[in-house]
Amino acid sequence: KLCDIYLKHKINKMAVRASEEEKTKFLTTVMVEGTIYDISNFNHPGGSVIRFLSEKSIKKGDAKDGEEIEHLDASEAFREFHQKDMEKVTKYLKSLPKISTKGKDRNESKYKALSKDFLDFRNSLEREGYFKPSLLHVAYRILEIVAMFGVSFLLFSMPADKHSILQPLVILACLINGIAQGRCGWLMHEGGHLSLTGIRKLDITMQEIVYGVGCGMSGGWWRSQHNKHHATPQKLKHDVDLDTLPLVAFNAKIREHVKPNSFQGMFLSVQSYIFAPISCFLVGIFWTTFLHPRHIMRKRLMVELLSIVFRYASWVWFFTSVGYSFRMAMLLYLVSFGISCNQF
Image (cartoon, rainbow, N blue to C red):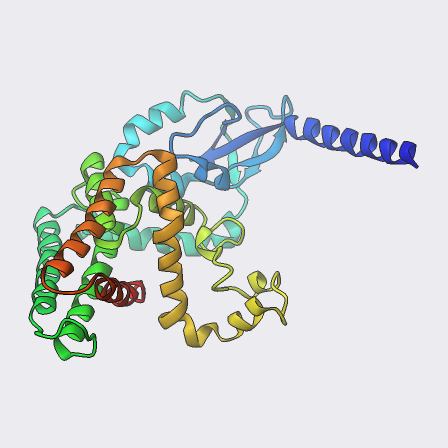
């Protein structure tokens, strides 16, 4: 019996090794503007997002330049992700080993009309100036948020009774504060896309501070996940915005992995009724208490860490200084934060 177990283990090990060896025979390739590049030894500065648009379908030594090869086309994603540094990135791209200069988009016939319509629409927006940064607009967005926070804190300080949340001024203050936090989320979204000032370092710094102080979250984590979403939108197992279990299932195929009679299955059966008040709030709590702090500590993102520390410290300082108890300050924080979570 021991011999049988040992032989089975050896056979499985040999099968795994053979499978791995077979995989290494294939190149990792990406196609941009009709040229297929070998990126097997390329360490992408933007992280793993590139693997969602690459393939392992060409064997080493099989491809010959001049022959037409069907491949997933990454041209549009390449242009959109690198539009701020196109000259520099294109120069680097062309230094990579070329497999073929006659790559053909595998999905060209399937999405040709749709892609053309989208490109025409994008070009019309560009001509109208929608992609040009407006410093005046950025200043307005920042002042809007500062004003909303200022009004909310003023309202919080006004009631004589600091022990009850069921007061008109306190309720209004929570509502305005929650909306201000939500507006921080949208402002940081623009910063994460480098579309505030057009200056990369400034936009990223603004995003991290606004997201950290305004929402208690990590801009670095958001960028890594959101870029993957834009690389392959609405594609299961690729678009991270669809990977929402255990709280939400946006697609019936995702729910297939959940047992119908389990607690999670019952929770998802009523998700359309509890999505806004409960699910979004739970996601926000999970992000701010675990997922984002873990990313910040792993990556040692000091700007984000200091921004979040400032958020919590200033909240506690303000409420305790105007007469609220620590417990009441935390309750008001959760109510305001819950309102902000349900705006996205």
